[in-house]
Image 1 (tube, rainbow, N blue to C red):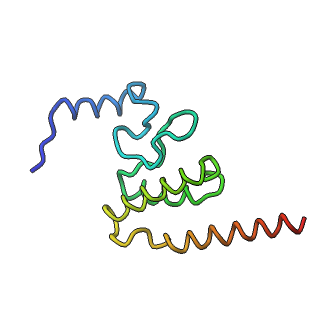
Image 2 (spheres, helix red, strand yellow):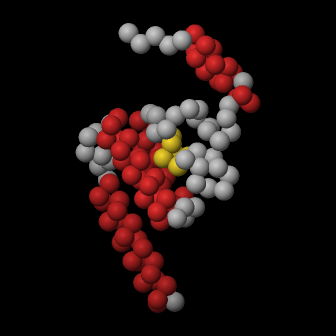
Image 3 (cartoon, one colour):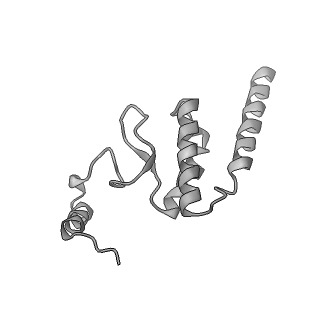
Length: 119
């Protein structure tokens, strides 16, 4: 049985009832994040602590508006962290769309480049 110290429980309760005591750079608390603060505001993004957060992180990093806020290297690192957490917490094979998302991203980039050439 895993018993948590009382001070940890109290601190967690205080953070829920007094949001001003939360760390603004870590909006979901002291959990792992796929983005350790790459953007200029230094806020950690894409928490990797729950199944719901992992699924949301995977979906959002594949949105062009979200991915555009990062360098290609940062996007690769973010995706790798999400995949690793997914394998550890959800499915050892990783996100079911991991390969198709990469293919979709490449196809979308090719289509955008083709449109640009036509204009």
